[in-house]
Each structure stands twice: as C-alpha cells, then as structure tokens.
Length: 242
View (cartoon, rainbow, N blue to C red):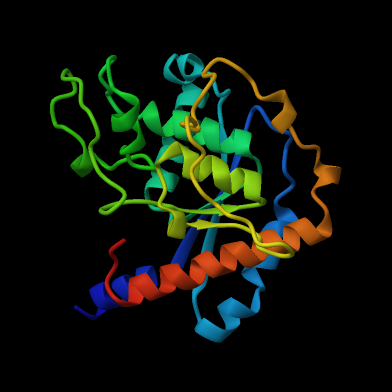
C-alpha cells in the first residue's frame, strides 16, 4: 500500500544515533552536540533525518546491571535496550563508556558461565532482538549473532576510545570512526588485550570532566559521526548488510 511504502521510505531516510553515557563518567551535556548533528550540512545535502537518543548506562559492574529491582530502573533499561536495538551509530565519549556499554549488551544475553574469551569476542555489539536469540530462556547460549549479520557503528571521541572498541573484538576496524587529525594513528588490536578487563573496577582515569571536552574535540567527534552516517546511508540505499 501507499502508506506502507511511505513508512518504509521514512525508515530508510532516517539514521538512528545513540549518544551513550555511563554512570562511571562525568555527565555529558548533549544539547549542543545534538543541535550540531541535526544542523550538519550532511543532512541538508542528503535529505537524511537523524533520530538522536541519549542512553545512560548503569554502573559498569555487570552484577549491578543484572540485579535491577527498582521498576523505574527496569523501565529505563528496557527503553535503552529498545533504542540500541534499532540504532545505527553509537557515540562513545570515553573508553570507560565502551566497557560499560559492552557489559550492558552482555547482560541481555543468557551466556554460559564458561564462555571463552574468544566466544565473547564474537558476540554482537548491540542488544539482540528476540529473533536473534534462543527461544528457550532456560538454556545458556553462546554467541547468538556475528558482526557480519548485525551491528552498530562506533563513533568515538578519540583514538583511545576507538582502540577500546577494536580490542574488544566486537567491532571490525572499518566500523569504528574516530578523529584522524594530525599524525596518522595505527589502529590495531593490542596483543593480550580483550577490551573487557577488570569487570568490577570503575575506571577513574577515564572519568572526563565536561570542561576537558574542548570545542575542537567535539567538532572532530561530530565529523566522525557524520562519516559513519554517510556509510550508514550507503548501506541503507543498497539494502543493508555489513
């Protein structure tokens, strides 16, 4: 029907962006960031619409994530999960936020207690939909999907955050976007690093105060998001696929 086609076109013309924050990091005032994204020349030139949501993750200790009893917290978690399932791009302000994000994703999976690190590196990098997981909630499951069939692009504020994504094994290098101004950086997996260490530790060194996010850093971050958006638009045009 005409209405159905209109809805499909609307989805194809929309890029969903999640600005991810963690309880471990200083709050990020996203107002100016969101406005700069929405008014970027990319949107005017392509006609693409940006749907932008703020995602606030709980403390990075996975036990805290799994043991949520407050109904408001459960609702917030469910809303975050739903938003991330449909997001095309995740914006990460610190490497600590990447760790918290992946623990949040892992908490959505009924993982085996003896899952290997190699298996964990093949897990999806966003919460899977019901179709992507097992129908039997009582059975432990291993990796439900792969980066080839589902995924979210990572738009990182700096190189260290980008390395955290790569070292986790949950993103392919060409799905990670970060500022490349100045001297070239060799973004490669560091030997012996899984990007998910110290599960119970809050990374105080990664807590960045708002005043440390300079205007130049934000401008470069926005450029990385727009580069990711361009690739998302191309994949939507060609019918998806990673």
